[in-house]
Image 1 (tube, rainbow, N blue to C red):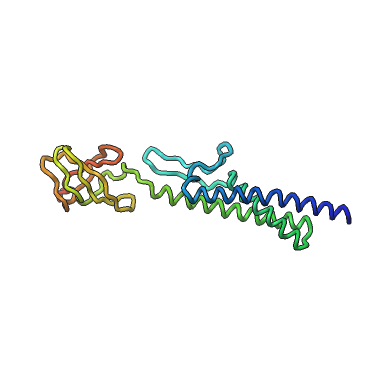
Image 2: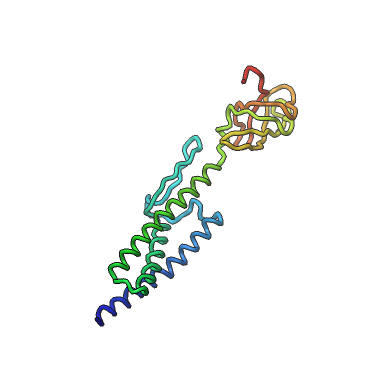
Length: 201
């Protein structure tokens, strides 16, 4: 009986040693993530973390990964607090460890899905200006002729309405309200456009 009580005390101490530091780490990481500091700079273990790869056409690929430091932090934080709770509730050591492991695994899965969703939302909103080629829009600020200046166009691509700088090769100024089509990308933020004629519809 004394041995069993001693083992319980040792396990309780282990639960506390896991619960407090891992809870602190979890809170820090959550704050960093939602403050925009944690984004793609999550702790990594080799190649097992959730990597975001940008392809040549600018599309992002994110994977749902379970074996990351962030997920382990969540697992051990929940495991520790669950162990403390179940142990104080009078459950046996085996039952306490089993339930704590199950709850920790459930939270690990939830955290993985949560951060995966966050990464998808973040990268789905990232503009890839190359996808604007062939898109049509309306001149917002007049565009000077022969690439002598920059105007602005309101254009929809990647399911979003955007206002971007634009230039043109045409001989005459393109006035406000004119419909245009994007023919090329001059730089990372400037479109090359021309008037949208009926032949372009």
